Length: 119
Image (cartoon, one colour):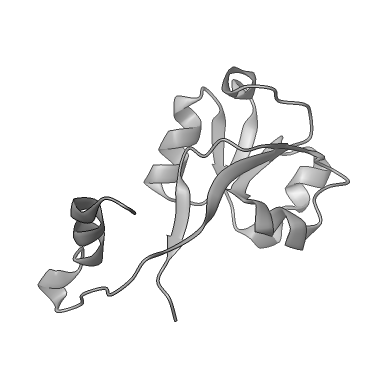
């Protein structure tokens, strides 16, 4: 976000539709919340990780040899049922969902940052 060229590119992604951004905010770095201890990125191999249904997030998780499982956040009961091994999102979401009992481990990967436009 600090790189002027990248910022300009992101703010003008929809310029062909007469939509131009004026600011970008970093919401938080990506973290992975897991049921079992994960000490480094290699430990994610073979794990089933909940992701957004986006090519970017799916691709990042699959590049770690983990299985990306796209699902909405309101279905994270799959974590408690053992259908997935972890969640990929920002730490604020783990706090809101209270996943600490089922998945007490958090790896701060910083593989990507979630951004949003100001309201």
